[in-house]
Image (cartoon, rainbow, N blue to C red):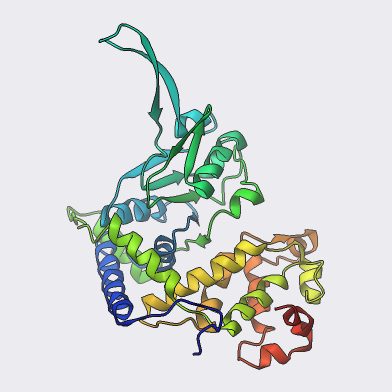
Length: 357
């Protein structure tokens, strides 16, 4: 596939060797996670893509599907600090960010104001059942997720690098929960649905968890290695066609845009913003590397469109009454958007859009 004409990044022999290392690390991570997690291959892949793109993700599924275990196991695969926060209705912002306190200096006898870091000050933060805490506490994560810092009083405290927020939520129990606002949902690269295991997988889960079998997980990557791989992902070139394909998918979700098809206008009240395009491209770059390719294909975009877009579009009453889901909308968008180079650019729906780029 041709590279982007305006992209100054190139993949040299050292980068190609690094791709092999990333593939090896990917295989090792899956092997280590497989010691305690049965199945969920697609979920694991998307979780690792988040890791290699410096993103955050949310896992949604009913209780008992090992969402928390998966995240804590991933932390054991990495030589990084891990922190788990159980979100509850009485949790306050200072409980997660940290707070200033007054301490007496034993040498001078005077008092000093010191900062005690909260559980956010870790490389991997598990925000367990994030929708069970009030909006005020949820909002305390916004600055950390976007700016990777915490402001307490007039002082800004930098967070660790790398830094990931991996959140879970239960879609079944809605009593006593506080749905996350769209502005915070948009900070998550992926919203990953964790489904039920197959019969064979559930058999293996039952066999393992009801015996004395204990599997230890060995670290695979260090923080420095992860930072190197994150930089490698950004060096992957993309063609103009790939960028246009992402633009076409995302801009069609916006009801007020001329390119929005009828089913979007019928089912959506709000579409995805520019961050969706950015995350689609970055995530697809990482997926391409995981499969040993130094370039992005439209297949990568199509595979990741649902987890990137499902929490960035808002269904209206008509869609809810007809039982339409956001994944149904994304699937229909993919079916109605040409993926081949040339076909997309010639489509009458997108000509006006692409003349500006």
